[in-house]
Image 1 (cartoon, rainbow, N blue to C red):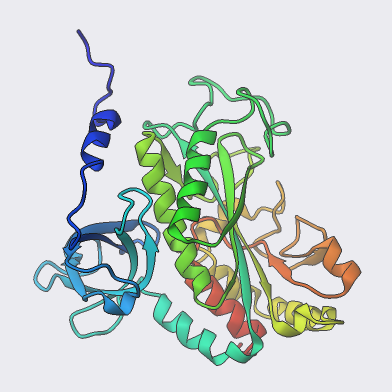
Image 2 (cartoon, rainbow, N blue to C red):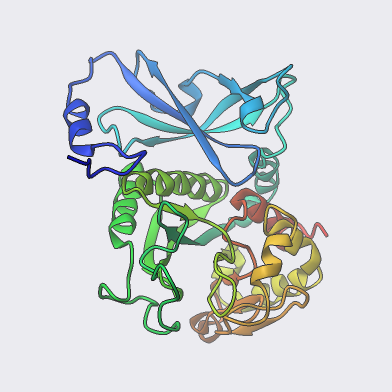
Length: 366
């Protein structure tokens, strides 16, 4: 009798039997997670500890083969993992942990994709301004053959319109993955604030924030890891490509909401307008920082159509989703609040985005 399992899949029911085995009281599994040499993909590996860590500073520095992750040469391959943020493990449960790590080379200098270090330095300089972030991570669900989940195998679904925040099996594809991810993030301790189906079918979004300082980047990177890991259990692939389907289909971004203490206070709109002016003077720098390939990925997405601004021009407007910077209607009416930078691509590094926004708005570092 032919197996009902496709190649590469396993029986989760059988696995569950082993996951229910009790752990020794003096043991804990810790999954070390890090960004690899692409600046987009995540890697992870686990070690056993004989204590339950409560803070990343308690965890030992570890290493990995950087020649297999694009972060070192084979002749000098050790790259070091420095724990920076700790989370509960929603897969192994119990006292087990996930830990986000920075990556450092043999000489204790950061790897090329370790952007957390400089981001943290910049954020510390602006601590007194109390910068808050909220990021909206859009992504697309694909089947194991890289075809958009739920799309006809030959052809396309109906035009965009009924899918955004939709309901029904003919409008929404992959909700199981989304709901499982949402719950996993809450369990882990990530400040996830919502989710919704997006304009293109099989495309979704989750929001993280508001977060103060470096927590934004930490939580978003770990939320991405959980998304890929949850989707793996469903035999589904997650794509952060900012334009996964060419043509008349919405791309995917990482819209970044930002405010300072002054923006959130009475007449904060004056500070918001000053921030927009600073951003307008640095459009090219921000575009270069807003995807891992210096704007090349965003060229496919920021066309001035399908709810995007043009990559070549800076614009700002109230409730305008076709502008570089959107001022929400409620903010304009209350004259305080936050701004939304709609330019970052879905595969942008949240540390890089956080750093350049604070440099431009808070530190006037042009």
